[in-house]
Length: 353
Image (cartoon, rainbow, N blue to C red; front, side, top):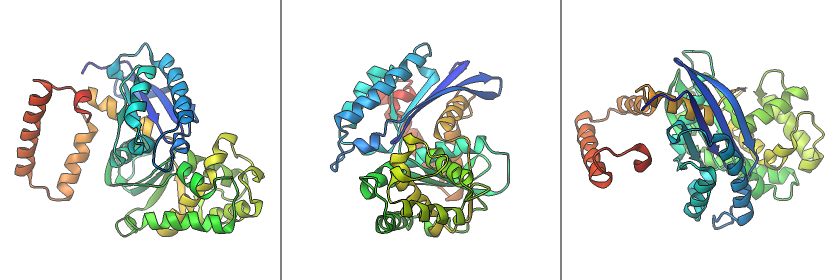
């Protein structure tokens, strides 16, 4: 692929839609302007997982604005990824068809572990190099990703079906916060976490939080004197007590609480609190980058014949002692099937990699 001077990533999250544009200079990416639209797509999912019309209209309006910003860029310079809400929505295909027409670019719905990989790529590129194993936690609107990695390489990737929007809608639907509701939300999150606790405990030295919930909680704790350095267990205990005492998300008398974060705050907090308890986290630092930056670095790597997906696959093959001869046979067969289906030189968008 020919190198593009400007790249763009669009993250169609379950809480917010985000656009990030970067300029390519030599071997570096320089982040330019970005846009954020609080679409709250997950809030529009019915009990049987259909996106309602109101959520679709909010999303399409945001994508129309993104499309205006992206209209001068070629297709190969833009990658658009959909996450949990578009993974589970029964009418996702119908919505995506409308969304692609509005935005003007193809939309790729990624699996949870691919989302986790891209989050780690973004976070790792924004941190100083270290030999420490990192635990990266990203609370999204409909799912939460947990990654253990070192340097630029992820070691373990998991995506759990719990998010700040879905948990807020389920356990705090009217914004009321009681001790019983908070306990129910925390218990649900702790049950989800049982899937990873044995593999993750004790496998990391530093905990990193990325995206909106981690940023919101960090700011609230620091600005209100509950913590001096990131998210701490003691700070979470103090904020939890304050939230329960306030009794309503609208009555939180706290510095740093953004109005657009309020509807999803209680659910996101419950997930964070449960993770600190189950994974024995004492302190968590905030990352300044996440999924959309990971998408940009991943896209940039493909132009340089340094596809980070290949690096991740090779790492996991080595870790799990994959039979290389069998892997080569599967690779050749997959390539032949792809050529039969899509022609001599199938492109990535056709294969939906």
